[in-house]
Amino acid sequence: MDAIVLLKDDHKTVEKLFKEFEKAGEEAYAEKRRIADQVIEELTVHAVIEEQVFYPAARAAAPDTKDHVLESVEEHHVVVWMLSELAGLDAKDERFDAKMTVLMENVRHHVEEEEKEWFPEVRKAMGRNRLVELGEQLQEARRTATRDPLKVPSATA
Image (cartoon, rainbow, N blue to C red; front, side):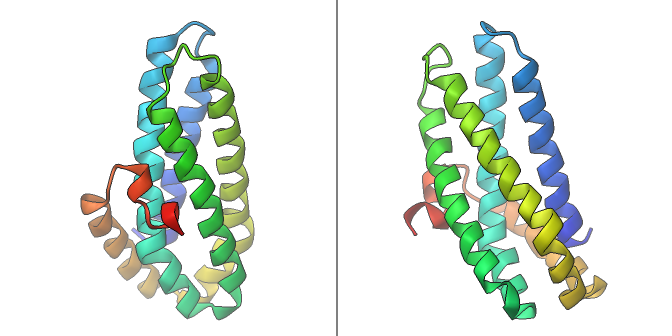
């Protein structure tokens, strides 16, 4: 699988979880906690593999995307801190839904920029073979990626 397809699949997985969260009843605390925990793991792993593998390769192949990479890392920084806060927050806490809503807004913005503005440039610069090779590296990195949001490189950047 090529790297961009893999990352877009991750985006779809998270969006599906967001929609489940939005459909959950106001007092469906156990369901919301379960969904939030899945979101935390998915986004943490996704951020790690992007930051450690994809971003450096994309930046090398398409140097004009440097500013986008730097902005993306900053967006990840905000998201991973929100994930760490969600991880320790009771689903019955009055801030839980609000925090999840802000997280969803941030992630949706990030995904839209990547998929519409940045990924096409990277695809053009890298070509299919390099993207397939990079996809394999992303899958390998996924296996060992931390599940702790505060251990994502951008958490302390």
